[in-house]
Image (tube, rainbow over all chains, first blue to last red; front, side, top):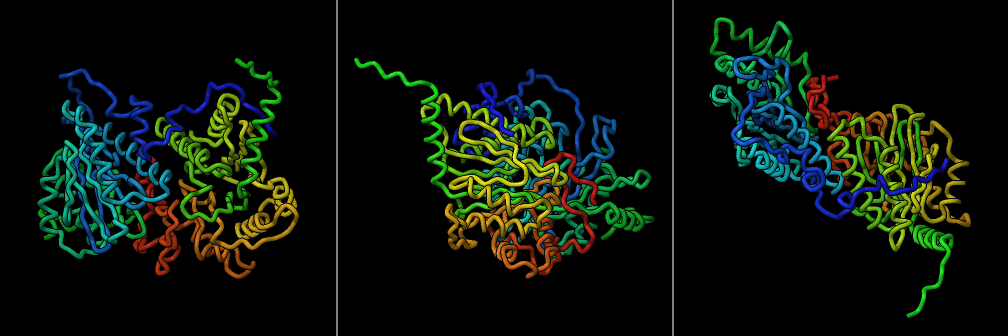
Length: 277
Length: 291
């Protein structure tokens, strides 16, 4: 069966055919800027209340890196969502966790995932981990105008560097500053408490199972003292999201394993609210 | 001032078509052929860096013959088109049919309006849930589209190649069988003479039906050697594991890292703790419920 499509109505635009960058964001900025969060204008001085995601923790272990996030989103004093996912696979060897305005953050993550895959397909090679971390920084920077009106997004990025065969954690600030973290990091409203917990429980050379436990302990401590962070919900069977990145790629820890970890942590805290030490 | 001679439009089109055909026939061929678990792309291409076969989207791939700069710009445009569509709608809304239509419009417009037509031929293929749902579209320099069944050969001497594929191909062949058939077709000239064609001159990739999400995978190195080896030399299931279960991060990169860690069964790495597979990076609902 052969057919012809005459006419020019659906011809690819020159923007598609131009030789240019291998960045999806740059292409969309030139072609359809309204699709990007940074391409939108808000009335000045306005502010709205939107769901906020809360606590993310990331820590290195022997052979890779772990990132975990609680599942709660809050809007003021209301729980907006109990089972929101805040840790995402950015590509095959990295994960990104988000704290801040949930809607914008999820849109940024979606854009970031396409950005990395787009580069990989056009260039035929994987971007370096440092390059990926910097791309994320520039996207956060693009969101600065919204951040100044209260719609902030602060991610944490963690990946496995294939060249040096080690895990790495990158933290960000709201202006797009990107910092390499040693050992562990936490972001979001409960991060103060999670960081204290990580400081005491983390040590170099943890194995994967120990590191998952440490991450869950840290989130438990954050939920203990921060009302916006959700603790493990045994009644509804809602566990934190835990992602592991090592030489074989990024993967999420299975629900049944998480349940075992969480139950162990909760049981150990009976009559011992301070938890492991 | 001299008046230009009147040239009838039939003659203009014919000249352009002849020009494009000559350009395409000079190039080396590409064979696209369906097998039981996907679609295989085999190109004669001595370059390791300049690809004739490429991933476009999760289930869609692209193969081309002719002038590199022309099909490369269409390849990049296809990736931009697919990624933009997937980003503003959903990943499942990106289809080979829509992409083929867009390419056809573009090729047709260039053929009639530009001073020189594209000297290229393209295949856009999409792997479906079963071999009946596979789609292979062949697009020529003038924007015509053909919906092919099972196999396509493009480039120099493609008529002879198609004829040979037609006699050798049947539905449900294994990957190893179709690769040997494709190489045999590529190595045979117009007059039936054979020339040697080794792995260094081949670019081989598959769209593997069983891979989750991104199904495109380049096949290089020892795996290709084994697949092209004599039948029965190695277990099919081992190859299946290597293609389907290997980490996807090395797609597109001709790196030896594509080989799974021999210590880890099927390249699944240290999943010995039973942790679930990675969530699909493409969806915002990430922690895809572990299987």
